[in-house]
Image (tube, rainbow, N blue to C red; front, top):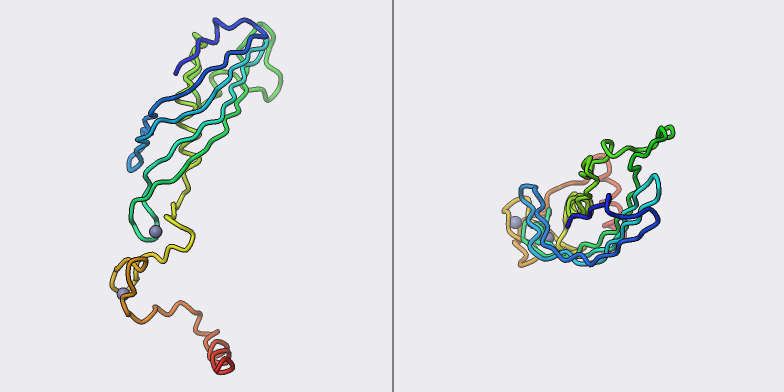
Amino acid sequence: MRIDVAALEIGQVRRAAFDEVVDSKTEDLAFDTPVRGNVEVDRTAQTLRLKGHLATTAPLMCGRCLTQFRQDLAIAVEEEFLVGGSTAPREGALRPEDFVFPLGPDLVLDVTEAVRQHLLLAVPMVPVCRPDCRGLCPRCGKNLNAQDCGCEPVETIDPRLAPLRDLKDTRRE
Ligand SMILES: [Zn+2]
Ligand SMILES: [Zn+2]
């Protein structure tokens, strides 16, 4: 979706329903379901504000057990930027060229690109299929969610703390 901001009069608000499959433009990540929601652009003399609430679901790979699962993603977009004008931008204010969202000199705002970038930020760095995912056995590689493999657990306890653990085990008996 592209919105021609130049065509918006100052003080005018443009609301639109967003419903698109967004290309992630990122390897290993394919948004395959339409992103749906509402966006709103409002224009003042100096600024342009883009707001929106959108949601979709994306196929992700669990970082622990390496299976694919679907995760709901919800994003709130809120961006404000200057759209020029004759006065010099105030200190620290952002100009169209400062924005990562394409807002060309023609003042056509690429809403899809803004949504894409927010979606990428909403994807967890290490997606997990469920909070209690047990992951793969570090010894034999089996998916521990499906079955116990019977391997000895890998010793991850600091050897210096082992005496304490032994103590605890003894007490429990
Ligand atoms: Zn998992
Ligand atoms: Zn195992």
